[in-house]
Length: 445
Image (cartoon, rainbow, N blue to C red):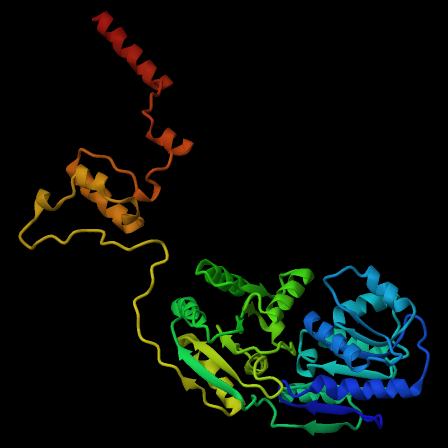
C-alpha cells in the first residue's frame, strides 16, 4: 500500500481492516506535505452506512493524533450546510456515504479532481446493486491515476468479478478463507415456529448471562414489533434501522455502547463494520436471505480476540436459508433443544365457548336460552362462527333477536338504526288509485 499499488483485502470481521488502510493513508499524506486546495480532498473513503462512516472518521482522528491532517465525515439525514462549510477550506481525508457525496458534487461544493487514494470499505455491499450506479458516477469524477483499495469480510464471485473493473493490477490479500466466521464465536441454532420466537427471545433475555445483546431482524417494522414486545415484558430495548432519524440512530448506538439499554434490535444497517465492545450475544431473530449477511451479523461479537455466542432462531420456512449459511461458512450450527409448549394467548385467557351436550339430549333442551346467552362473558364470543351459531339457534326459538357479539356493547350506527326502524311508507300513487276505484264501485252499488 505504501508503494501505491491497488489492493483487495479480505479478512474476518474484527481483525482490524480499518487500521489496515487508515495507517498507511495517514503516513502517505503526512510525508507528502501537500496543501489541500479549497473544496477538495486528498483521500476519499466510501462507506455504505452512516454509522460506519462516523466510526471510520473517528478511527482516522484517533490514529492521526498529532498529525497536521484534517478529517471530515459527510452523510445524509443531517443538514448539508455545516458539511459545506467544512469543505470550504479543503480536507485531507474525507469519509462519505455515496448519496451525500453526490449531493455535494452536484452543487459544486466539492470536487474530486485531487483524490489520490480511493477506499471502498465493505466493498461487496458498495458494489452491490444498491450502490453500483452511484459508485459508477463517483469513479468518473476521480482521477484515473489513483490508488484504489477494497476491503471486506466477504466477496462473492459476481462482486469480485465486478471489482476487477475498478482495480489496476491489484494485490490480493486474504487473511482467512473468505466468508468464514471467527473461531471464537460459539454458533447455535434453535428450531422454533415463527409465532413463538418473541416469547423465546423474552425467555432468553431474562437470563443475566445475556449481558449485552444485539438482535437482528430482516425488516424495519419487524424490529419495532420486537422492541414493543420486549418493553411490554419489562425488558429495556431500543431499535435502530433506516426509518429512524440520524439523531435517533446515534442516540440508540451510543446508549447501547454505554450499556443502557443492554438490548439493541437492528436490521442489517448495524451489521456492517459497527464496532461495539463486549457484545456477549448476537441473536438472529430472523435468518437473512443472503448468507453473507449472516457472516457480518455474527461478526459483531468476539471482536479483537474476545469470545462470543451467536444464536439463530430458525423456523421451518427458514431452513433453506440455514443450509445456505452452513454451506457458505463451512460450519454446522449446533442445535439447542427447546421444550414444546402450548401457544401463549395474546388477547386474554381463552375459555371454552360452548358446553358439550350429552348424546341423549336433543331438541329444545340443547338450545341456549336467553338467560344463558346474557350471562356469557363478552370475550367468550369474539368470533363470527359462534355468533352465527347463536343466531341460528335463536331463530329456531322464534322469540329472541340477537345481534352479533362482535358488536356487543357498542352503539348502533345510523345505518343500522335506519335498517332496524319500522318502515312507514305512504301508499304509492297506483295504490291510491286502486283504492279510489274500489270505493267508487262500492258507492255505485
